[in-house]
Amino acid sequence: SGSVRMSRVNNLVTVILDDLIASDQGTTWVLWTSLFPSGFRYSAPGYTYLPLSSNSTLDSIGPSRTDRYGNFYIYNMTGGKRAKGSISWITRDPWPTSLPGTPA
Image 1 (cartoon, helix red, strand yellow):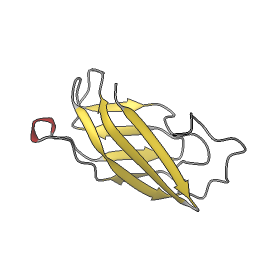
Image 2 (cartoon, one colour; image 1 turned 30 degrees about the horizontal axis):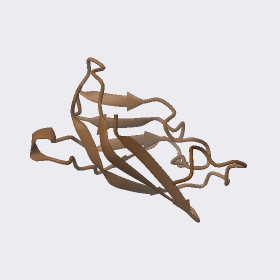
Image 3 (cartoon, rainbow, N blue to C red; image 1 turned 30 degrees about the vertical axis):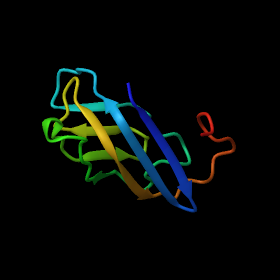
């Protein structure tokens, strides 16, 4: 449950997590595979870690990580915890020919 909204202005990608709830994956981190589409992905080789804060002290979560394949991880997040916050990075991806999702 919850939502993920993303925008791109020039080469700056901003992602807003609004009460994104983790399902239990049996790990101390949560993975959403290919969450970010082409045109919005972190494009340097490898991956980057980004700070992320939770919506309450009860749901203390660790940093997030994204990679050039669009995968997104949140560490210290187990089933039922909620993520709320924003993260940003620079992309070198070309602009997509069509935008993903439904316009707000």
